[in-house]
Length: 144
Image (cartoon, rainbow, N blue to C red; front, side, top):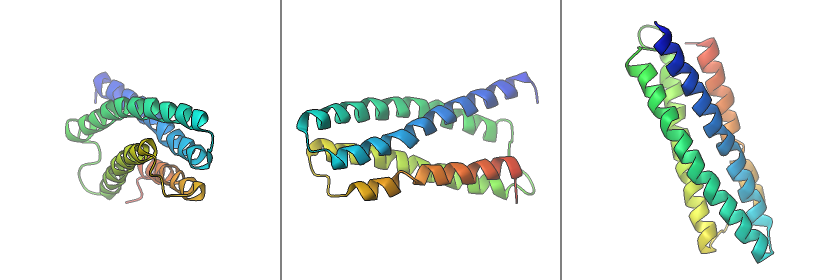
């Protein structure tokens, strides 16, 4: 595989890392929003979460597109013993749902109908960390 493959891979890793930074931080803002009683501070946190979600979405798109290019064009993870890739793709699908859930949560906060506690958001915040750990092991170790 040539240097184009390495550039695609490098940019895929860059965009995935940037997207994950948002996935790690946005739910933490939601923890603070669930605890906040000052309307001015809550409005500031709403603005922060909106801008971060929008930016995360911009970062997610090239991460997914570049991952698809690696998978479809360069054949990464195809062939015998590529069960790790199927598991990774399943987890990416879960992350896309998680990303969408973050947007839905923002809309509920914006509408003033949050019904969850800060403790729930603390647990929700752990989901991308666990998925990141599993995906990293799958990609590096390729256990099956």
